Length: 245
Image (cartoon, rainbow, N blue to C red):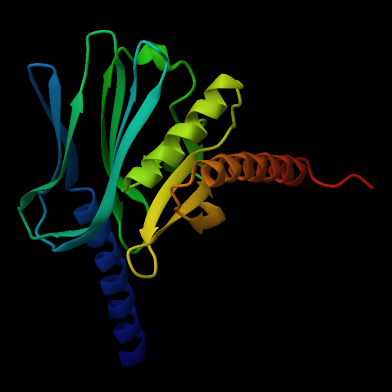
């Protein structure tokens, strides 16, 4: 009898603890604060813990702009952070030059560090109809994730990296080449003062190469990058359709 009571108490405490954790997670709020100063839009990602429990979390703060020429640019920041009970914290800030005809979408997601589930979110839009279907929310396995289809994210840091990105982007636009997945061009340190450029299709690294300033090299590597993306897209479509015997 005593053992039964102890087991019952343990189950009660376990359920109560889970319930409390879920309730505490729901007390975290996300807020995008904005201020337009002479054509520069200052955006702040703010999180607040209204509960009584210390929170360990992740955030994703993303702004996507489309100008009159239909050129898309983006700024994305993400990191881990913690919140004390009743604490409010500015997670990140983004400044964007905007004109009245520019389209803008800004998203803030806050995720639980352990479960990776979105527990709070906020968004801001300006002339959003110009995006059509290029930027949207999609649900995957009942969890809300942001899928930026057709978006090309520039994370280069040097002049050589910027030169590569400019050539790469221009060649895509001139030839009307579009992909149904997010492309990210990232630049990371290498040996000495050198850097490497990494090409990601969604979150998969499909190509890595050294950043070199020679024109012929950059032109060749741009073509190789596009060929790799085309191959990735073809493989992806085959995988999605499955094999027919």
